[in-house]
Length: 117
Image (cartoon, rainbow, N blue to C red):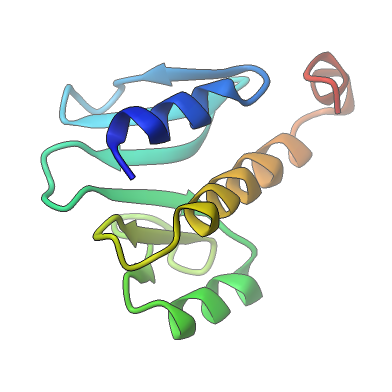
């Protein structure tokens, strides 16, 4: 999966925007000001941090060697996904959508409604 494909999908989610609060080497996708994905642009292969339900995070880490505890994040709630081609594209997109949903579900109901939730 290319960065362009990934970014196109992430930014297609309702209210998603791209930001660079940590400098040009870290692309952050946010919804209503809350981060749901962080991509290390200078890493080869690319690495992306995604929010995850703690129990599901453990399952993903056990199943995919390219899913690690979130680097520089709360390791209980975040995974780092190494985009090395070992994880199917649909699974990566599903993880990203789950991250987005977790963040949206933590927003006030008024903001959720504005996003169509």
